Length: 412
Picture 1: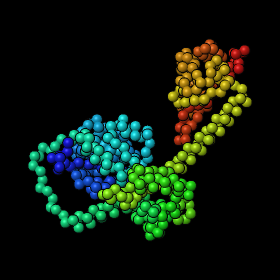
Picture 2 (picture 1 turned 60 degrees about the vertical axis):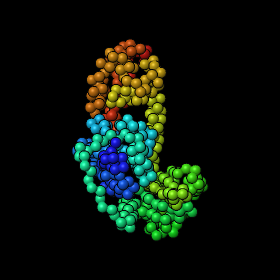
Picture 3 (picture 1 turned 90 degrees about the vertical axis):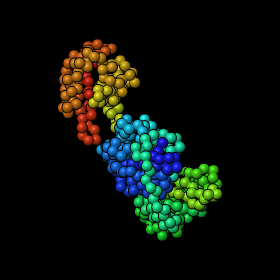
């Protein structure tokens, strides 16, 4: 499974992330918590990961999902295709069912949220070892290197403590330990910066003093269940109060740290600033509301004009039509909207209209009169006006069409 005999097995790990602080944190966590791990290299993006996977032949790659040049999903597919013996654990700032499904399809062994690295990465590594699915071939060298000299316990302890503190401080998220009564025992600088307190100020407070009062009862109930051993972890979205009185939306992940007898020693807390996610959701809501208003206005305008109107996409599909257009083609709305233009108007009509579609998609206004044979209603003498529509980058993404039927009694 790994190099050497089972008792001497070493897992060779390649760490891939575009942030140095994250790579450093993962490195320190592995070296601190797993003596059977060897960090064989690091990479800053997916393309470099693929190259180093071939050069270093690691047993395991721990890799971020969101990276420049080549993201973690595409890199995982490439590595698993070329080197199926290499296993991969993917890391991401945000957890979602879609991301987990994508990681499975890419061939990753597991998907770990970055805010839970401290509690989930090493157990995931142990499950990987226990499963026996790391088939890295033993080295061709049959003799094992001499064991390193033994380090005195006091020096080893001090070294481990230093590595822990370095990792605790350098991680990209807020980290804290708090006692069962809620008092902060240890906080990192990221959390201090997030909340605007010094570490001394925070350690004179309890988490109850900072959490949104509306969520306090839930948080206390969850912490009590962890303390009793009912479960080991809880997560929630809430708000913490900053030193200046402003509130910060956060994602909170809390785990129990116990002594050998199972008694709670303290809580390990990962606190992630959710401001950007909240802002993104707010902007999305505003965009949806604006789109809804615009659609309502378009519907109202179309009723006032009392003529066939439609909006089409660059891939020649109907995005929207008014009721007059649907009645004109003798089709219900749900048999037009979202469907290819070809399926609605027919092949003969599309061939006649294609050159006009090409012109409007090139950014030109198009006005024309012609006789077009439509599926379902036959030949129609029409006058039409097409106007290009633009996306947020000011690129043409489709057009709006106004159609007037000039065939006498058929005019809507």
